[in-house]
Length: 301
Image (cartoon, rainbow, N blue to C red; front, side, top):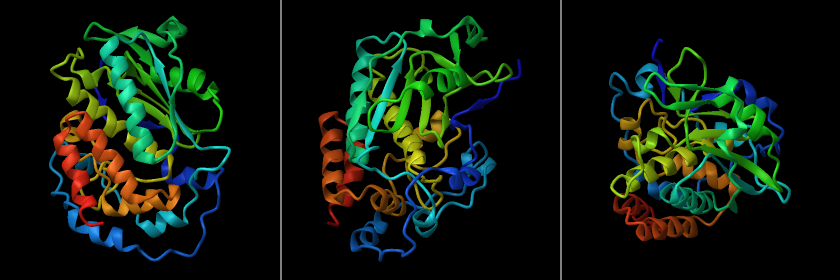
């Protein structure tokens, strides 16, 4: 079997082509003046180094997305009818894994400043034999496309604006690929990701924090795409594309100044409240490096 690995969630729709098809509120044409907050926190942005072999931008050169391009694009915005982010667990999770899902739920609610709920989990048994296999490494895998198209797209909980499935088992997208971290349809605002590889085999007390940060970065990154944000090439940012776990581990959990401005123009939350909420979350969970990133932005307010 030819081994091909991808960290980035594979799109079922090309971002640029599908933007015009999104059923969403038309963004106003008048670009708002940049608030002083976003100007000030640019000093906290860290320039990306020149990409090296194996990095995302080395093999995927991208044009990026300016604030103006984002603002004038069609993208989902919260409404009274669509304002809740949902997590759908898939599999049989142990107590440590359940704790991680709880923390991801809490984090996404703070990150996007939108109500986030975790739905009742479903068993792996719902997946037929035709959509599962044994990997060359000796563990079971589920077909990501089946989870996305046959299960998650059928989930339509009340006031859903985005839905992210979290699989306990490893995923594969095609017979010739050995695994994938996830699959997403940004047009349908639905995605599925696996926690299997984030755990380095088994989740323990020793690797709990590392796995958690990987989950927080990945889930906020992918749901950020659902809100219309492209990969960031401006600075070290959670919206950077990544090619591997090592590249993800090197990247920050913070949104850069441009991406913060994009998200704020869409959801229109209070910047200080969001940063303070995130800082408190990181402090409660002893994530010092992540807390420090929030403190730097808070200090300019």
